Image (cartoon, rainbow, N blue to C red; front, side, top):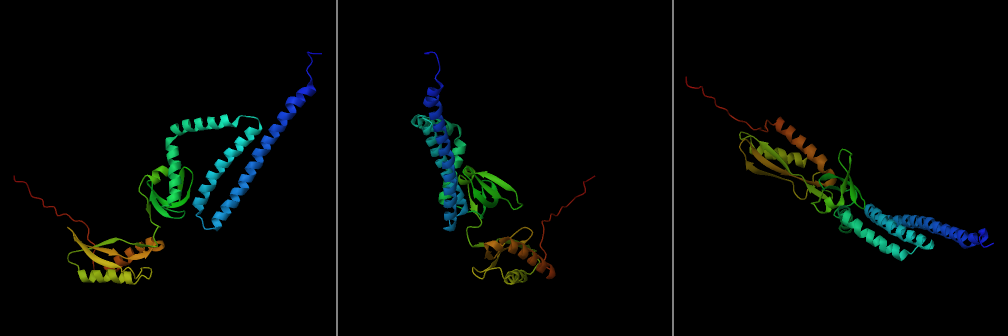
Length: 273
């Protein structure tokens, strides 16, 4: 009968082909995702073994994963019979609209790429950047993760880092410690300089070259000021800074040299009656 629905024809013409296409599309997506994951894991291991910085490796793998998954998704949709050329145009238009609305995020992304390319710091470096001081742990696509000295995790936008001043305290193998010590005008200048020089000579962590120096720098209102400038390995900076500060203060105390503090003389006159 002309009004009867032929289940067999519907099944052969629609259900089975669509079922096959859906199954193939799902297989393309799942297998593709698995291949991408395995491939990126291999690439990551190869890069790390070749000495590539871990931060750079993670960044490259994150970008590659996003690009590959986009291609896999388009291939799966093409298997379903969807016109992917129109989809690509739609993605481009959507990307433009999203780009205009997410300018800050794109700026952070571009800054992340520039940080990776020019590498002003690497994972493990102690830096001051983006208003934060801490140890760099990793650079993500849009932000950099830093750990402060008191073990807080701070996430800083890449744009704030790249567009500002970056101070890398770990970039050089050695650093100079700049310290200022003050003595009173009645104290022995030569004795004070000798004490400070001997304190530096006694610390084996202070480098012989460049030579550690003690120099008078100022005749201030209440004190005579000296610059003490030893050179140390970067890893020893804070320990030597603290120990040398204590050693010189104790030596001053033992030799009767006082570190003055600001004083003010106030003269009061009795009002006339």
